[in-house]
Image 1: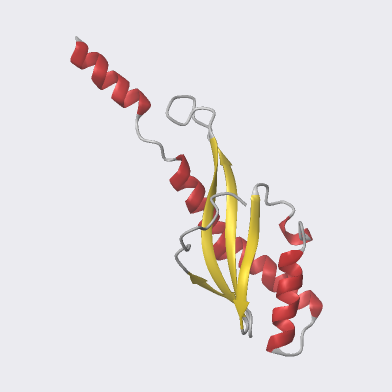
Image 2 (image 1 turned 60 degrees about the vertical axis):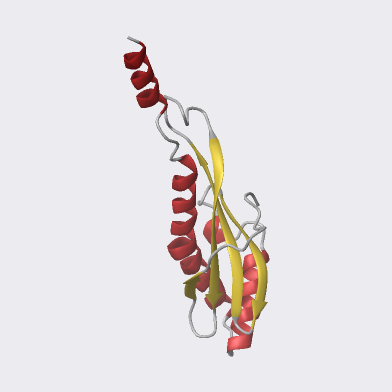
Length: 138
């Protein structure tokens, strides 16, 4: 009977997928939602040269909640540096569990995805490993 109880407990608690789901959602924002909004934001500034595009991108990324991202609840980012027309950004997504059972019942976490956006001609996205010391929360 103890084995049956142990098996039921393991099946009920399972393995948490919340952190992975949060990281996956942050990656989705970093790869599609943010680059499209950033490109639109740069276009509104009507830059003439790649360096002007970079300035417009940095201005847009420094806004607390750019208008094109206001509907994206829980998404935020931190600019970590730039070189030439490439800007390194850590994209964060807050995710609350909708599970009714452990291990994720009532829990929430931040997911993170690190990207480099080269804005010379259009917004080109490159996936990079988040360096050691990257904050887990914005």
